[in-house]
Length: 447
Image (cartoon, rainbow, N blue to C red; front, side):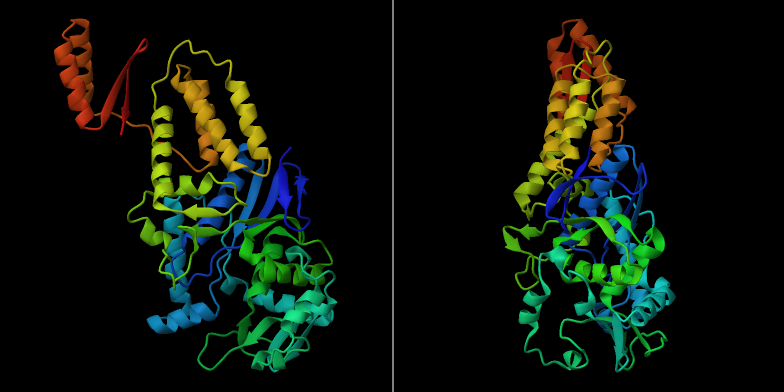
């Protein structure tokens, strides 16, 4: 049985879906005002890998990941670019889809956008006001955190702890609130900003309300899994829980999953440190599948340290797996250990998607394959494991000239003309094609 570390309970729990063999999963997506950075990519890759393992295990996954296409950063960036917020969002959504495709990330079942759910957001806020969980103040609408049962339990905080930290706030927005901790559900627009009509003001949604609305509208009042980066535990996911459960009276998500942070050369990624690099820029010098392999093969909850050496190591390891996968099939292979490898892989990944242990099994499997055990059944199982990590290798075909040279070398070996055979081998090696003579014939790999 798959076990998941649930952030809410801080424990490893058996995974039991709401519906047999079906999973409803919502993962917070990017705010599309720029190209995604390596931290965004880590989250997208981590949850794509989790989704893929669920599918490998026989589940149907309804996977939803949103785009925040209106907020302060988007409005500011659009004004600087001299285009509308929607045009800016369209540009970076297109870039997100292109960059994540390079990383082998499957498109979500749906990618909802905030602008498409404005009516539903307004209705959601109205319901919270009617139930006494929210109030209007000078055109804004705020959520009353004191009415939320066990507020901030996801982040392992108490309301009393938060109130101490909020004491003494004197900014203009705080002056509009009943309690400094109350958070915005609706924000009245400043002059010239994009806005929508509402019962309270021309304005736009607060950040947190959008995910609650899109998740419940698409997946229902209670979902199996809600995921995102560890930085979203508080306040974003905390506030999603408060407003969702206030409106529906139901548990919002049965399991909460959060991926770890990314550091660059052991430093927190930051524009001020000059180590902030977008995935779009990285893909100009690093193959997307190598970057994917680096990100996917770490256990999702653990932090990742992004270094040039780590990328080089990923490239070497990926090449080994590729050469193994592309080996020619052998007849009469002993496949007696195949069941053991599949069992070990399942045990590793069932343990909270332990990718590091899972990839270790794959390397052990590859070593066994390279010792002379490779028929179609083994290749299919090996490929299915690799695909969990988003790694898909295309079959390579040699051109006719190279095939002719290999055949010529085989003829030279048969005639015991080893000088000619070695010359052809060295010539092919200079083209990146390495030959290995086995009892089943010649095998080749490409550097």
